[in-house]
Amino acid sequence: LAREDAIKFLDEFKVPVPNALNDREKLVCVARTSLRTKIAPSLADPMAEVAVDAVRCIKRVDQPLDLNMVEVLHMKNKLTTDTRLIKGLVLDHGARHPDMPKRLENCYILTCNVSLEYEKSEVNAGFFYSSAEQRDRLADSERRFTDEKVKKIIEFKNKVCTDENKKSFVLINQKGIDPPSLEMLARAGIIALRRAKRRNMERLPLAVGGSAVNSVEELVEEDLGHADLVYEQALEDDKFTFIEGVKNPFSCTVMIQGSTEHSIAQMKDAIKDGLRAVQNTIEDEALVPGAGAFEVAAHVRLEEFKKTVEGKARLGVELFGKALLTVPKTLLENSGVDMQEKLIKVVAERESKGTPVGVSVATGDPIDPTIEGIWDNYIVKKQMLGLAPVLAQQLLLVDEVIRAGKSAQGG
Image 1 (tube, one colour):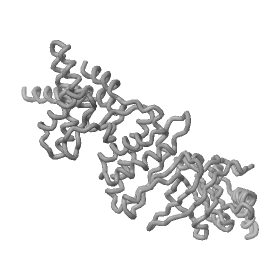
Image 2 (cartoon, helix red, strand yellow; image 1 turned 180 degrees about the vertical axis):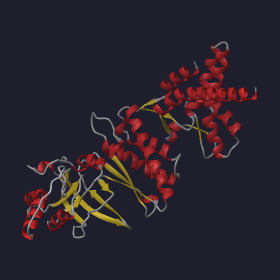
Image 3 (cartoon, one colour; image 1 turned 180 degrees about the horizontal axis):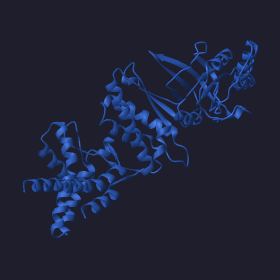
Image 4 (cartoon, helix red, strand yellow; image 1 turned 60 degrees about the horizontal axis):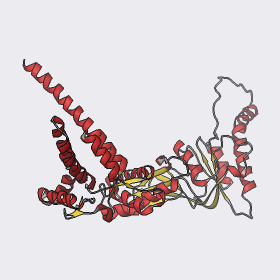
């Protein structure tokens, strides 16, 4: 009874946010509320804007949000405050040939899934030769198939990159590229990246445009993406390839920087939570005042509701209402104030005013979270109300099993 009434009250208490994607201020507030539970406020505030801009970047009309289109990468250097959003893509590897360009501007980008290396045939066959010339011809014929594919890419590059348009060419391949092929591509002035991750192959067309191709036959200019700048950055033994300056991207990268493994891991978890908080807001088109405001309001509501309930159920409603106060109690304990005194003050203000009343973690005094910009996700609160009683019941059942086992041993 208490759970059903609390969920019903949640629907009344929530604040609708129609067209949430365009309400950047609300999205920043909910991301900031989530991030401040993980990292310092001085860091959470700029990261909230990064999370909001990342989600707004990948959102496509009439399509569900896919947070996998936000790549979260880290580099162990600089400070966590240097974390930034790149509206483009960063690949966690570089070119495999020393003579390839390290930086290109005004680039065409070809995304492909074509093997550019010599592969042994699946059929076991033996070839015999009687002279060195025959062996050379045999080796040339084995290479010819791969070299023809590389030559077609180079010919296509020469066709689309002219002296008039001043274009450069970048090849990103999901499969391998062997050293002879890399040598040919390097001589043609092409940056070639091999063995790109499958997820990045999905992100690339969304970020730079064009389409991924599975064959080098009949390549056309519409298959190509575009970026203003592609460059490689080395960090000790690791290399990163940055693809920036793309137009209207639907994929992006959050580049986390930090001096220690711990700070990087903490930032990564915080950013992912912030992204999910923004996603939930856009999908729910509703928010719930935070800082314990809903729990205080639901407690007051259940105190009134229990008067209409008779029998044992009345005790259950009362206990459920008291359990909800755990959230504001925890906030007050963390703020280092007299928890009981401040809690009574907060509950009394809710009863007298009837407006959302939360807890300030700085002073412990009652605040209006809607004015302070403290918001929680509607779906998270609803799931909490639905799961908490079920989990408590399951834990009590486990305790009963343990007790039964001990009593049996004692007997």
